[in-house]
Structure formats: C-alpha cells, structure tokens
Length: 77
Image (cartoon, rainbow, N blue to C red; front, side):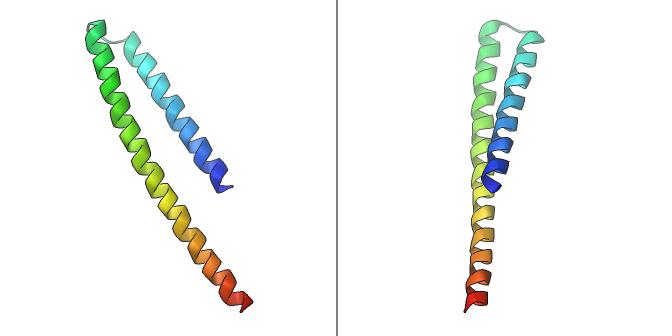
C-alpha cells in the first residue's frame, strides 16, 4: 500500500510539472531560447525538490516500519 501511495504521488507530481511547463510555454512572453533555459532551470529545481521529498518520505516509511517491526517482535516474545 505504501509503495502504491509513493508511486501515485510521484506520477502526480510529474504530471503536474509537465502540464505546468506546457501551459507556461503557451503563455510565455519571451523568446524561445529564454523560455527553454527557464524550463531547464525549473526542471532542475523540480527534480531537486522531488528527490528531497522522496528521501523524506523514504525515511518516514523506514522509521514507521522499524517501529512496527519492534512492536511485533516484542509482542511475539
């Protein structure tokens, strides 16, 4: 279930970024070269943000898993 949530979150973030970039290009009042550079810069920023959030999510899931594993082991003993 947690893997499905993470996968859905990642797909939603990527889809939102793609849609935002497309709309931004349609309404950009600047040259194509400038727009492409801006899209690249924003994509890099977005990629960094996704990586950071994925790491935080992974840590959270790992901590929860360890917590429940310990509880289960204690209850078995």
